[in-house]
Length: 259
Image (cartoon, rainbow, N blue to C red; front, side):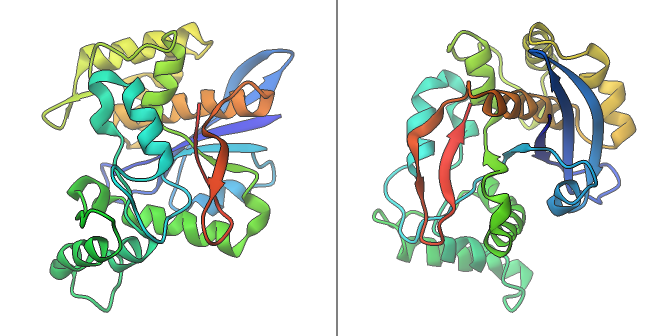
């Protein structure tokens, strides 16, 4: 069985897209068979040898109305992450997310427009975090994909790298951040590589040299490896979901972070 971990990326050549780490599971072990960057997630799912499980670091399932501190998955995982809580963004309503990618609105006005919609569709009148706003196009890509092709709803699962590392670390938050002031933090990346290597990941798969060859950030490649670890746990029936069982949005999409 093949599984994949996927993380959104901003590449050095500005093509962007997704970085995927594909692993093959056999007799309780796993080996990496492919690291690939794709422009659209559907490219990975439509391959001749598609993964049976794809864990993606991107919100799936959008609320019509948001409460304090975001969706249930976000509220449940944050307290487990200690100093890494800020890596879990509060996702606003579907209307606000789609407003943020509305091409009828001038680009320079979309953030303010999305914030206005978010305030109208939240209990506390909360606006949109800039970091969350920047991933709206990828959230919409997955939302449209899973609504248009429901056969993928059982394949594609939401995960979060820091929740995966929390689980790898004996359900304890990591002491080192992945980034400091927006720049990759070597000590934090080294810690995450050690945790992944202890889980059977080959050092060359998550090396900075591999990231450069793929034209993605070293942190994006490491996060995709962590997502692949979660995908393997899902495939083997070892993963847990937050919440358990998952909730569903108005379109039937699951709302849960898996680890």
